[in-house]
Length: 220
Image (cartoon, rainbow, N blue to C red; front, side):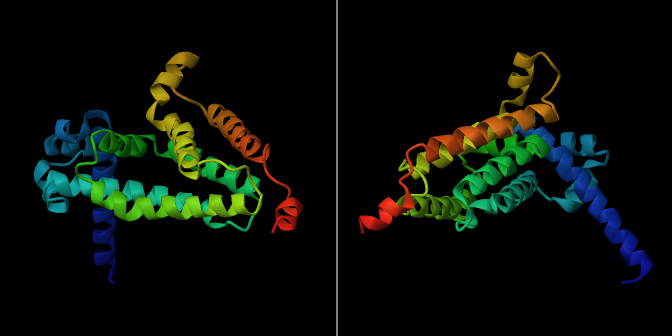
């Protein structure tokens, strides 16, 4: 690729990134219906016509924003795939990854939350195709740990729901938390405190009734 083509590709990438950043913020603040292409273009600092060159329709832009959100979220959620590691370490890493996403991508998390709260009318098929298999895989990990006596027996599905609720709330309800704490926004220290507390709560709850491996083995 020659230098002119390289520069052109970089400009395109820069403009596209600016569009997606602006769109993510506006979709999070106003929802799909309340967001206009003109508003996104204005926030991105480009003309509406220029934006339409990259994303011909509002649904195509919304789709791309949600695709990027889900890609990032699923990549960070790979920790439970390491089912052979100590459950306490795996669970703490999972909590840390979820809170890191809430801290680094709060607007992305809110876009996804608003889509789901609205009934996932636009993105339901993608959630069923990509999130549900991940959920089932993680449930299998928990159930294998339970069968081996490595963690307490609980409802694995609701355990994941609880983990999501405890971590995603630090993005979706961050303004409320900041209001209660009396400051403009959550700080790094707040997320560190949350990571320690949530991780410890989960590990203690699941370890408190775990069956020693010797007992499980002797019963078989």
